[in-house]
Image (cartoon, rainbow, N blue to C red):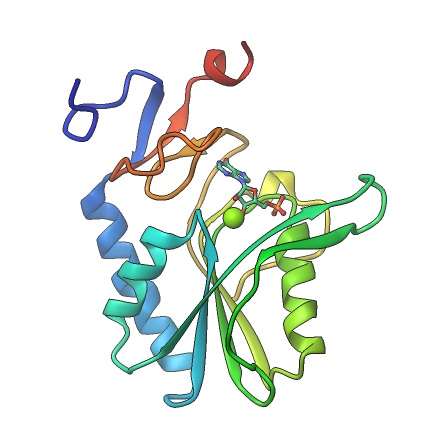
Length: 184
Ligand code: IMP
Ligand code: MG
C-alpha cells in the first residue's frame, strides 16, 4: 500500500500535513535568522529524528550555516538528571562558536538539557535550541527550546523523521500513532 499519499494504517490521525509543516518552518526560520549571528554558526542535527526538519530548516535560513551531526540518548534512574550516551559525536570543535541544536521533539527534556550542557562545557560561545515539536505535558526537567514549531499533547508522535521502533520516519506528515501499536 502507498502510505505516503494516504494515511498509514497505524496512524490514528494526521496532525500536521506537509504543507502546514513547510509553512511553519518558514516562520521559525525567519525567527532563527533574526536571533542568530549571521556568521560562524554551527547547526547540529540530532540524528535520526531531526533529519527531515534539519534539511528543510537550513534551506529556509537566509544565511549560510555550517552543519554537523550527532546521535545521543539519555539514560538515568528516573530520579536524577541522568547521563548522556553519545552514539555518534560531531566532528567540529565548537569552542568559541555559536551553536544551534536542531532536535525533533522535547519530551522529558533530559536529552536536550544534557546535550546543551555538554556543548557549553566544550566551550561553545552560545547554545540555542530549535525543535520541531514540544510535548510540555511530559516535561521532567526545566528545559525549553528557544524556537519551536508545534506543541503536541501527551500522545506518541510519528512521521517526518520521528519513529516508533525505527518505523514511520519516512512518512511526509506528522501524525499520532495508534495506541494499540505500542500497547500490544
Ligand atoms: P527527552 O529526552 O525525553 O526529551 O526525549 C528524547 C527523545 O525521545 C526525542 O529526541 C525523541 O527522539 C524521542 N521521543 C520522545 N517523544 C517521542 C514521540 O512522541 N515520538 C517519537 N519519538 C519521541
Ligand atoms: Mg531525538
